[in-house]
Length: 112
Image (cartoon, rainbow, N blue to C red; front, side, top):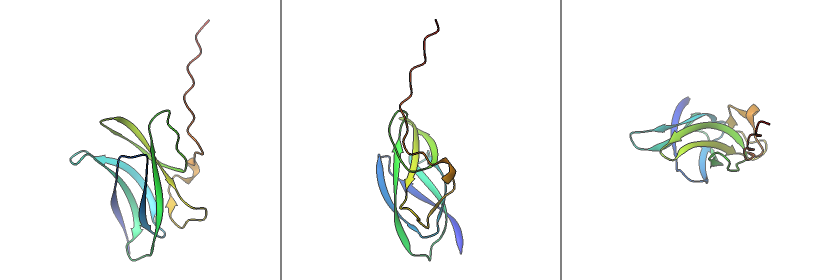
């Protein structure tokens, strides 16, 4: 039986979580009561698990993988990406938004 589950993510550049095979990565947000980042999934708890690596990047930092979402904490905005093996049975809802690398923002051109 599938259910929506919250997983706590540490506020660090990279980490691994064991998620049930077939889990759908829904979104991320912050639980301000405990100052924790939560990853929300739709998953079957009885399924076998596989490791999924998550990366967090601030503006102008580099990250790869499937974009999962953006949240704001005390240090600013953080963007979360899931780095899954090719043909992984874990599904990122925003697969179409896969970003190979975040580019640094270019300064605006001065008006002449």
